[in-house]
Image (cartoon, rainbow, N blue to C red; front, side):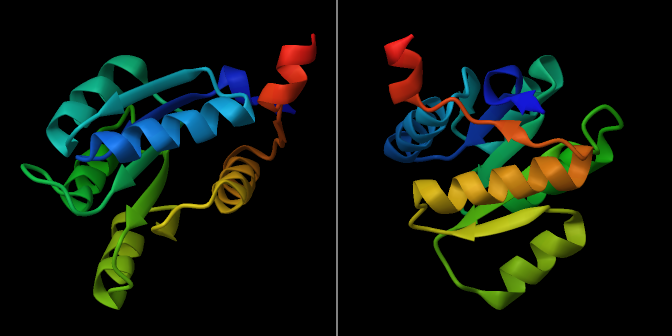
Length: 144
């Protein structure tokens, strides 16, 4: 079992509101090592320095979109096996198919619901490591 607080997460979205929302959702699940970027270029540098366990990236961003960012991550030997969740506001089948071809581990359509994200992250960590996540919900942490 791995504690959510032990996992490093990078959130990439050009909308500050979405970055803040995702950060709060993850914090409530027990994640504490959360880093954010506003586009793929910034996120690639951040991922190189922080070596995240999970990347949650929007698809539609300026400068370097989510597919370009995913491709760059998969081409970096140190990041190639990082769990990658692609977020999309569109149900475009071509985008989802291309994300899968480039190595996205999971795709979530916006709006993002906390329970769905928790389920996806739990399944993803289990699939990649064989471990389960020890969730420490915020309410539980506040009681200790």
